Length: 282
View 1: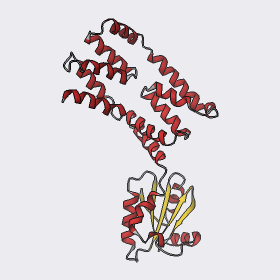
View 2: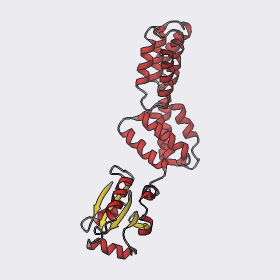
View 3: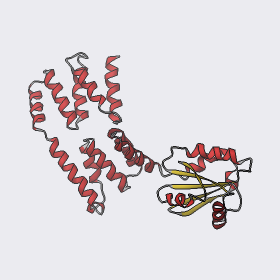
View 4: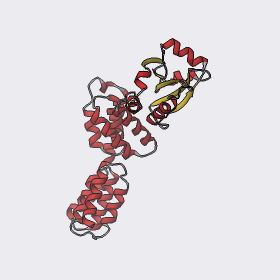
């Protein structure tokens, strides 16, 4: 996010640092070098950056000049890094002289990669893109398995996407102290309920019928559909693939297979099983 800081809003800008890191960039517009640096900072920070605020401040503004004096800015341009309403770092003009180093400098104030992935996953989940959110949280969890917020977030999205075995595995690795939290208890309750609901009597009947009539394509299609709805997507695709390998045009097997694939946007398994059927088709 990029905005202008001045005497009218400087307090609000400082308060925003409680939620996001603020780079208070103080410059002299009369300095011919400031335009190039400003552009470099804007390119590095990005207008759509959800993790940093680049607050551009003209030193000729009385409020900005006063802040410079308080925090010890003695040469321009300079950046005061604000977090939780307080200065945590000061980048003076000597560190800003190399424009090629600006992207790396700005990146050094970004959150850790797993934090960015977590935030992206939250947005995806809010947009109803649960499989994409699962993929982001899986990556974040691989980086920081000890981060309890990521662990709980990953377990939650695993339950939502009906990857119940994965959810139980994630929760099983929770430290005993964290198992006492209400969030853990709520997640376990949601998982237990989901596992209970997965035991669909109609699915069991279809499983029995399929075992008795393995060549009946209609039963196989019904079972695969039921499995996908119960969260056993990979099992469903494996079943259908076994028929496609024998006959690509068997019944409606290919259509059911592709229909299931279309519901998996963002699921890491989607690419694997798409390649598998394409290799048979082409």
